[in-house]
Each structure stands twice: as structure tokens, then as C-alpha cells.
Length: 255
DNA sequence: GTTGAGCGTT
Image (cartoon, rainbow, N blue to C red):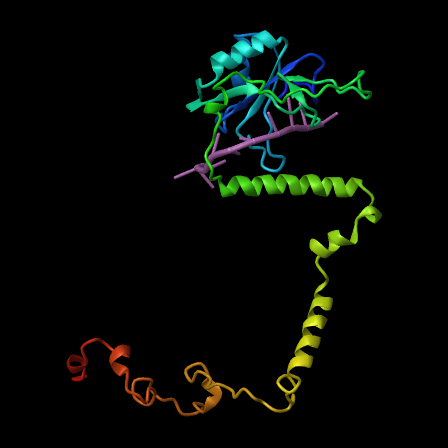
């Protein structure tokens, strides 16, 4: 993977994750590591990739050991041109396990409310004017949507596979599940039978569709047996020999 | 050969 030869997350006990966006598709973790390691102790650099193609998704996660170094890297590497692309470095908002992240650090969720939980105002953790350069375009690429949907679909598929099939609600089959062709065909046939029973009740021996004239040039057994007729005279009753022959009929008429 | 908003893995 994009790790340092280690499988899975190395250690996220006290690491600060930075989200690096707008990176090139060919930028690897090895390319970002020396760049980010210059501003602090980089614990791990991870670049999510597609499980099918294996291509980078265009963003990476850089985990620092200290918050101050991470902040410095954000302030320094944010907007820096890397591999011909201006990257956007910011603190990760969500952890790998969908856990809330505060300042790049995974917030420890306490099972029990500590005393009285005072409601804190959702003040922006970022400095003023920071999000001004994070705004993106409205339109998105359709190809990305397809990838995202595939990812989610794959994730759902994996979840379904692990989960019990009996737990699936009937609504799932009603919405996504597709009836077999037999049921659908039967349903449609019944509908047609109810609407117009005379339309589709045609005798099999009867041929409502007359056989179209078969190609004459392709049926040698039609009547050409024994008598060979030159295609330049007998055939083509309409008289299109001009096309069959040379574009100069008056010239070849001599022969 | 392409794409370009976003939040992560054995």
C-alpha cells in the first residue's frame, strides 16, 4: 500500500492527520513524505486508492506527530505547487473509523457524559479566511461520481455479504432488487392480455407478415439452373447496367 | 493518454 511497508494504520494514538487535496493523480506517498517531513515528524502518509484500478483518488493523508508541526506544514505546504498541481493542505475532519477529528487529532469520545455536558458553540476550528480558499466549484465530474458510487456500492456489497441476508428488509428488494425475467414477462403479458386480447391472438398457421421478396442474385436455385443468363442483359429489369458497367456506356457499346 | 470535489487503509 502507500504505507511504509506496514499493513493498516500504524499508530493513531497521538497523531495529527492532514488532508492533502488537489494533488496529482500520479503523486505517491513517497513524493509527499519528504515534502511534509521537512516541516515536522511525519508518522505516516496514506493515499487512498481505488481497489479496482489502483489509481490514486487525488488526495492524501499525512499524519504528523505534533500538532504544531502539522499546523506549520499546513501553513507552508498549503497552496504549494506539487507535481504541477497546487495542493491544499488542511486538517482532517474525519478519522479513518468515521470518528470525529479535532485539529487533525482523533477526538476521544467518552462513553459517559462528564458531569454536565455544556453545549459548546460550533465555532470554526480554522482560522478566519481559511475556508475562503477551500471553496470549490459547483459542478463535479461525472467520472468521479461514477467512481464514488462504485466505491459506495462495493462497500455496501461487502457489508451485505458480511451481514445476514435475512436482516434485509423487503423494501431493499423492492427498490433495488430486480424480479426475474419470468415474473416481469408474465406481468407484462397479463397486462397486454387484459388490454387488447384480440391484438395478440393471431393464428400461428396464418402469416400476417408476407415474405418479402428474396434477393434474386443470391438464389441460384430460383430458376437459373440449366440456363445461364448473363447479368448484363437479362438481370436488372429496371436497366441499371450503367452502374454495373463502365461509366462510359457509349464507349463500350462498340464491343 | 482522460478526470478534479472531497475525508482514509490490513
